Image (cartoon, rainbow, N blue to C red; front, side, top):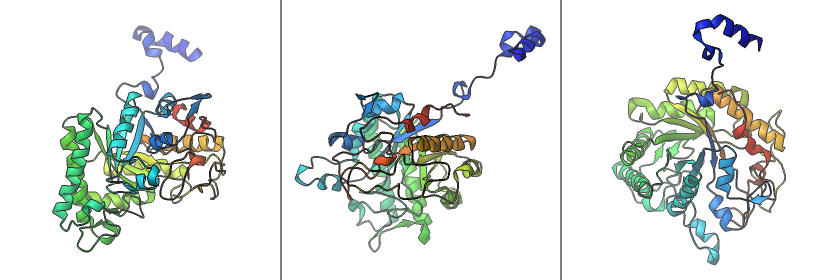
Length: 391
């Protein structure tokens, strides 16, 4: 109080307004809000197969739960023709999941809650990640890069144009998922123009990425749609983006996105993350964000589906507890902010146990990483999105 008193005395004619503190960053008019995101790609399927979400003991729409707890962005993956998502249920299967119709439904439910949307094109009928970039079955007979380029353009354009016609155009579009070597190359048949940078096929990869970007721009036509490129593990970001932007063919994207799972991606420690983010931002003159991350709150499971995380040693200072999960997420978020990053997305924080199936099991391999306890009640990890950060 003394400081304010003396400021008033000495400011004199400058008036009382001169002694006010600067507004917090969240209130600065020209500063975009930090993106707190959740990948909720499994939610529709979990709900269809008996999953229940609760907030303060009340069964609640999961999209609303995330909105109420600070999320402003939801991410959804899109597969080309994921027929297997119906086939795994046998005669009980009634529909596909993570196809265009399911994504359309999910985007609509997210936008009803006022949430922005990131659409993640995998350019595959199944999971695309650093170890698998399988070509859609419909494209396997392609022999020329010009045809593959057109196929990527037309698929991307038609998908987004359809969503635009439904007033569901996403605010962010991700072209490829964890494309550490590239995309469209796993088990490629002879003659297919694979896009594997690790095999030196950077020209093909750049051509395909540029085609996808052009499709986004042509559909958006003035709308504010940001294009994201994505690799897993910050240690590969500099190498990958240096090769992709080489020659200037690929330049019209907006955001560098990367996955950072502290249990797996140990080359860059949590405390070093801000330096990495700042380095990417400064070198490539692009915004930077974490597109996937997660951390366990328990080593236990709630079904017979073995969990992906929990058997590894926890990161020092972050035990596998509710508080440890929350502390990890707060630390990661502050690191991204300190590096000048624009957002962080938690991967599948609502993949709770239910009767849903995937290729490997029934239930969830992730329920110990969610923001819900084994009764479906919101746990404390979700509070990282409403923490008071220095941004």
